[in-house]
Length: 435
Figure (cartoon, rainbow, N blue to C red):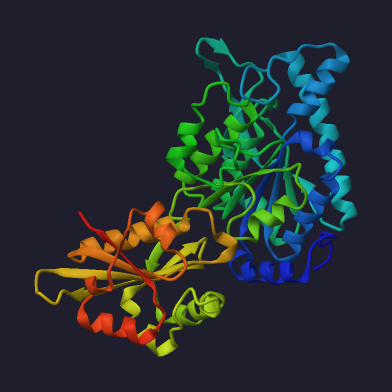
């Protein structure tokens, strides 16, 4: 692979290669905010796009022009009515937009060509005037009527990367201003793309300032109602949720000012940006026999640290229906098992929560709590009235985070207690009553 970022390590390459089969020959629509073209690391961002191409990922590139139109407006002393294609575009503003976007197209083609990529600006959008909205004529603001997906597919098949500027032309030959995020989503829907990636001037964060790692469509729409939200991020939330609700599996919003953000977002389980999703990006499912090698490998370090009991392949296979796997974007990162028992006195059923594990790289993200909550609900659905857990090192987690109570080993059925005593692990025994 050529054009690999300088700081990438060989273990990073192994991580990338794990994703290659699921991404190969899929279409990614990448939308770049115009302001990023002025950033010192913009050339590195284009190198990352070249890496995607080298992995046989088909890329369609869309770019915005808000920053360039603002600069040109200030330079010429001409007020712009709308700089992002979301409001009214008057005659003076469309002239600024044409000049700025034409220059951007030329610069972008030159930089991508320098990376030995075949690129072409595409006129694949049939547009019409936005018309009158809330009593105001939007003048030279356009809306996309149709995407010529066949023309784009021909380019992609010929290994030519299409570049789509945020401009379109109506049936009368009038140039109309478009919102680049809207262009990206409409193109992605027409091409049935696997992903839309908004490479933004900034990332999405919560009230505490922490990165929002993932949002459902409903959560994205709710966040879009936040007062005084940056209009740039508002656009991405609005069009990102639209894309997912219309069939695009994943939409990513990443901070393009960060180094190597594109590869880090796409080729790691947790990513570095925000993913908007319509389906179950994160799911807990029944384990399958094919999961057993991954489970054993994943838990090896915890077994060596005496945090988990060693389990053989045959032991897991023999109780495979008791095991569940936590997946992130199709990759197992955690597990839990629920073993049910009848009580000795015949008063009911209880269950044991076992084999609770989360990969070290995914700790402190709430996955452990989700696995325990899932185990409790599963035990409840199986008719169990009480859940026990044995732990040598995580008993504080069960007590303080999950509401479990330390108990005497006599709470266990006789057969299970005999196994407990024979092991010599002297684990803490905890329980929780399931209501």
